[in-house]
Length: 155
Image: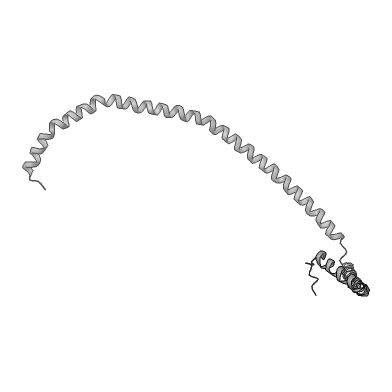
């Protein structure tokens, strides 16, 4: 810390600068206050423009809420109607009769498979009865055009 003599001398040398700064502040104070008040006035006019926007926004939000509530009620009504119709259709299904139906479908598919295998065996037998040159030619053509099966019957 500086001794008291230096602090007092330093303060005295800076006194004219401080007084000049104080005089400048006082002389420009009215301009600064006026600029601050002008800024506040501009802010007030800007905010006034937003007040009408705020009321419009509130009306828009209320309208949207009303429309959403109406749409939500309509969707819920439609979903309830669909649920009732679906439950009625499910109630009409005769589950006691479904087991024998599936059994008949399975037997029909098995009969189709057996008939296809028998047809294939009969065709091969008829092919073997042909003369040798025709048998080779038919087999070669069959290999070229034979479709490949991609169905797995689970056997």
